[in-house]
Length: 210
Image (cartoon, rainbow, N blue to C red; front, side):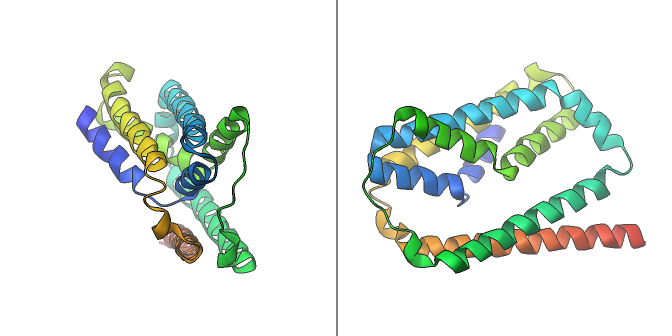
């Protein structure tokens, strides 16, 4: 199961989002150590999420068996994703591409750690990702935490490795992250989130109507 988790972690590491840009921007502005401190904050947040979902997996299974779970989750997820996507698009329209410029500055290690911790903890995707993984594993492998720990170890180890590589290689990929690329990638992300949220809401409406 370790390698299955590693593959999932690899796929997750390829996503372009606020975590990627925070890591890269911090390392470009303040150096390798600063970028790694942001990474440590992100990893601590992930470990806490894993612990929470592992302890609450039995409750998650009971919730999944509830008949109204899917419509409720679809509605909540649809509204959340659509709102995040819409807000992202409005912010990008207001700021424009020139808002993404790298400037030299320095921050304390604690503030860098807190920055990584908060940006990961307050990202709705993080909770839904780990909760979804825990629920799926509990259904397919009902043997307890010992059975699924290798899977989580695979996911987490690849995330740590790839995040460290992003920090270390930030200067090499800087040419690909000029303001216009960042701007349009975030616009695309906003459109995808908005579209997927609308799709979820339409799916719930169709389920209720049938």
